[in-house]
Image (cartoon, rainbow, N blue to C red; front, side, top):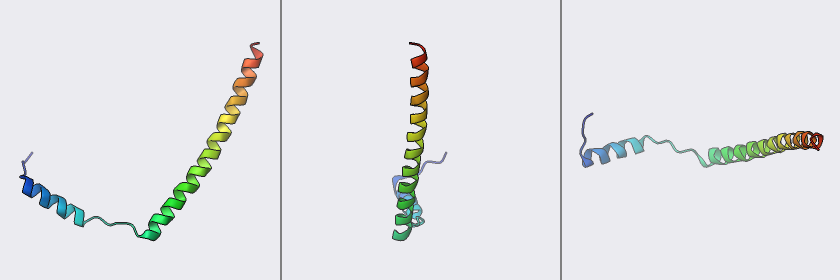
Length: 65
């Protein structure tokens, strides 16, 4: 592996930073809304799964009494 000097490293970082394409504000808002929707859907899904498992475990433990 070739060693680079600190100056070369900084220049390489600057060159790579120029290649970054930042999302527009509209893309950021759309992505945020999508994440919020998906998080809500998944939270209700896991609430349902947890409720079903809770009912099953409660039923099974009632059989053991």
